[in-house]
Image 1 (cartoon, rainbow, N blue to C red):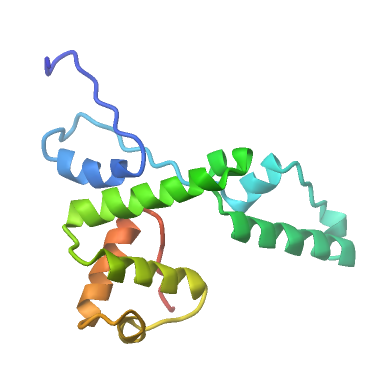
Image 2: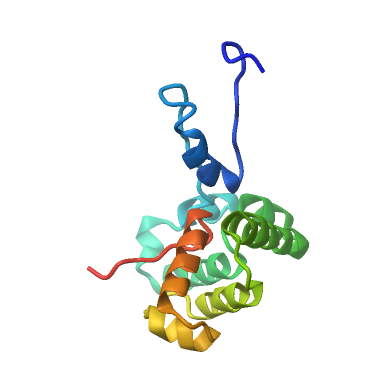
Length: 165
């Protein structure tokens, strides 16, 4: 591969992980562009749902908004899945991210614990948690292991921790 004429494009869930590794080789010769899953606003556009400002605070607007939020949280925000409504796509995406981008890349030997942690996090989304509570729920010996696992999964953008201000 000729260094002068070759272009390298890294896309997909590995892009963030690989960009860290390629950064030293490509210093000054690359542009990072992150593309996130749909925001709620983009989801509403795709679903062709317009919530008008004059009805936003009215009962009908609140009911519609709540219904769409529940739908958004229930089906997720990946454009391909929203358009296809194919559960196999979502399962395949999750499996690829967890097992290829997390387990293999980080040499995790206990896939069961990682899977149980992901189930715990998904079941308790939007709730506060302590690493110790997850450690006990998943039967892991150290909270540091859970902290590492969550960090690995955060690197794939599958989950994100929110800090308490």
